[in-house]
Amino acid sequence: MPETERPESDSRRGFLAGAGTVGLAAVAGCIGRSHEGARYPSDEESLSGGITITGSSTVYPVSVAMAEEFQQKYTDVDVRVDSTGTGGGFKNHFCPGNSDVNGASRPIKDGEKDHCADNGVEPVEFQVAGDALTVAVNNDADWVDCVTFDELSQIWGSDGAQQWSDVRDDWPDEPFELYGPASTSGTFDWFTENVVGEADDHRGDYEATEDDNIVVQGIEGSKFAMGYLGYAHYEENHDRIKAVEIAEEDKANCTPPSLDNAKAGDYPMARPLFIYPDAESIREKEQVREFVRFYLNQSETDLVKQIGYVPTSEELREENLSKLEDVIGE
Image 1 (cartoon, helix red, strand yellow):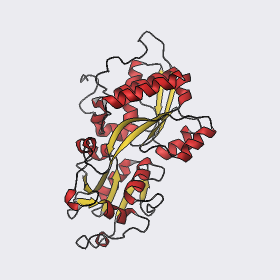
Image 2 (cartoon, rainbow, N blue to C red):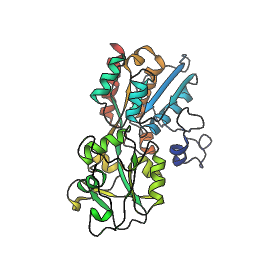
Image 3 (tube, one colour):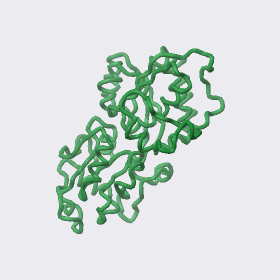
Image 4 (cartoon, rainbow, N blue to C red):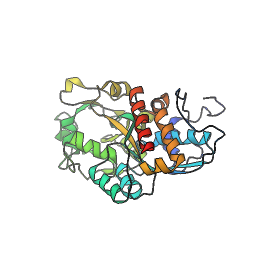
């Protein structure tokens, strides 16, 4: 992207922290190449109207970047993106029919499908990226470099450890200060089910927030803090907090969070990220249909990697586009 379009002072940290919850003013995106064969309305065609996107704070940066670039091409389309959390987005906005697309950091639940169906909303699942969910501690926490799933379960379970030394004898006799996503977050759901081990078994005595910046600030502010968040938000703040390596079982097999490790399947906390547009919005609103097509095409580009996530494969992109065409043709 030419420097005249994006000054060097515009860091991705500023993008993630300052994009705001709605609207896209002053957000600069850089998509990269379009794919051969991608079909969009020509510049001469009129494309206008509004698109509302809610949901996951993890998917939010990707949706903002996609939306900003789409609006540069189609200036009469107004795309609004709101970071509400995966579950909050489904419950309060998407399933009641008040948004066209919901971002999600875990698959939609059966109860959410039922809620949508009750309101005539038909969610269509598209995987658009991958994430390396990251556990982080304070930079001065030199006693910990790797934790296992079992240890994370001891810390984050409903009857979780109160002090570091409750988990390992050689850890400090100091209480945990814990920071993480709220229960409306898909990140919370994924971590609870895949790491803590049982749904509804996540401890409640921690600082819960939908703002990943608060997680970073909390960890940075206390030597005895721990938290978890999406890799993109960690990577943007890697000088402020320390990521710990993860071992599913054996501490001898610790793996650091990274995009390469997530893509290779070596990182135990790699997970897929999704968008769920409403089928009726796709069929009835041209601007939604073309935006989703644009999003799916660009999800295999370097934009996703630049933000801090794993792009989709060419095969998955083609599967997504084929599914989209099936929905349009219904």
